[in-house]
Image 1 (spheres, helix red, strand yellow):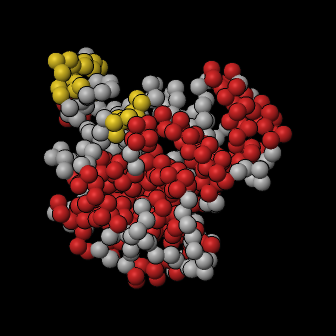
Image 2 (tube, helix red, strand yellow; image 1 turned 180 degrees about the horizontal axis):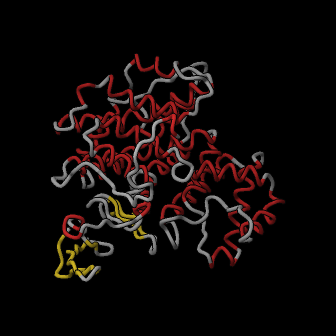
Image 3 (cartoon, rainbow, N blue to C red; image 1 turned 30 degrees about the horizontal axis):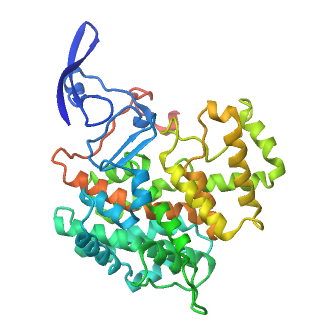
Length: 431
């Protein structure tokens, strides 16, 4: 962040205040209001912080109008096409693409940390069988601080490194165990001979009674889902992780907070909401009816999985995810799955309709990822846990960056108070 020669002037009550401005390497200039309250005695008002830069960061850049998503400067479509998830993890965590030797070492370290402490199995058995997997993950990830005391001191760079590797490595195991527990099947231990995505699929779908071979097309599609969800700048869950970490909380507690925030249907639950919408539509014949409802401004119905809050043109992740969706559907077939039939036909009709083109309501990453996960056999309750698994490395990268920032201070948003002013207490018999 560099201070520019420009300043912004704020004038009120006959007084003017000069506010410094900073220029990023990409994106709009920002007005620095850190001293505004001290100098002028006023706060700014920005519900949702949608016009406020809460930090400076070198990790991810988004230009929603142009449909740009960069990780450390690398376009997401290049990473999804040419790289793989663990290499992207390295890039996010350390700032540069690894050499062959660095990547081999990183993959080895992650692979050797995929098992969880055996006593943690007892945590899963304490939940009801019908507990949502996200509820299980929030509890189990938060409990990791009770088992891994040697990586909770955030002032120690080595402990921060160990915690980072452990979280990336163990999250697929925890998510798979949450799934297995919810369907009443035995836990499947990780295998060191499988890559990251294949290992996750094996832990989810294999059973002790028979051999399970991971299809490489499904493994590649799973890896792309992980990659395309790895980080997304200062979204709600990432901001939650940063706010929690600003208090000095241990990394496992901070990531558990991020998982809890991601659980919300307006955030990580979007692909689940998309599949539930497809089930509501039910059949290809009913698609025109629902498209008509989506166009009716007086009808509360909205097509889930179309458009994006940040991307005002197109979601750069969607093109790559669509390719994976086509590959998976070609492999598995959709003849006997009415939900996937509806999805394919809805996509076709919406893309051909001028209304959606004019409104820039194109299928987004949630639409296609939901289709892929449904085709693979995951229940909708597992969609958000898989999102959490993918986003863990982004949360950790943001957490590490914040801990190392000399400007870090505990988060303390202000408010526009509209409640009662001071009044005297009235004894209960006099009320």
